[in-house]
Length: 120
Image 1 (tube, rainbow, N blue to C red):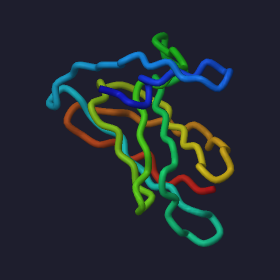
Image 2: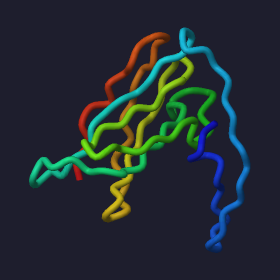
Image 3: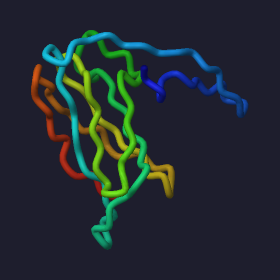
C-alpha cells in the first residue's frame, strides 16, 4: 500500500482517496536511499518528501511517482520494493516547498541504490 500515491489532490484544496497497491517480491526488487540536510549548517531535514519516478530517458516514463517516501529525524530516506531499472529521485524541502534537481539512480534486484546527499 503506497500512502503517498493514494491521496490525489484535485487542485481546489481537496483530496480523493484512491487506494494504490503494488505487488512485487522482496527478492525481485531493490530500493533507493539518501540523505537530506541544510547546506548552511549540515543539520538533517526531517519530513522532506521524496518522489521517485521512472527515469525520463526511458520509453516507460510516466512522470508520476512510482514510489514516495519521507525523511526521518536523521534526514535519511529509503524507498523499497522498486522494480529493477532507472529512476529519477526528487526531494521537496518541507520548509520552502522547493524541489531538488532530479537525481538519476539505477536500481538492481536485491540492492539499495544510493541517491546521495540532497541539500537545501
